[in-house]
Image: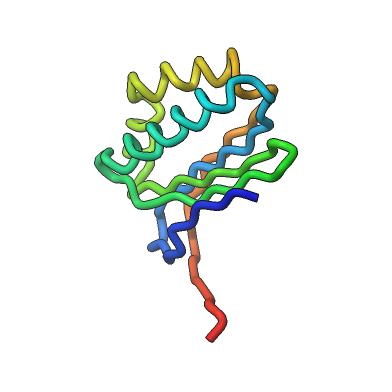
Length: 113
């Protein structure tokens, strides 16, 4: 299982964009390159807070990106490069996905001592 974690708490009203996707077996290398490019591009966007991501061996993945506010999350959705990659995802890399946008009301972490 692949994981990418920011391991940080988030202040109330942080926006969480929850992306749950089933990958196809098509173009693994292209997908990996695009995922890395999008993670880098997102991290450069105004209002970006962080990301948590995991994918199982069957291709089901959950990525949660965190944004300062709804305007920042919408700006990411509307980013031209992100939109182009989203279309490639629909055409090549995903058989289905769900996207949910939520406002965080409480956040905390725990780490085993």
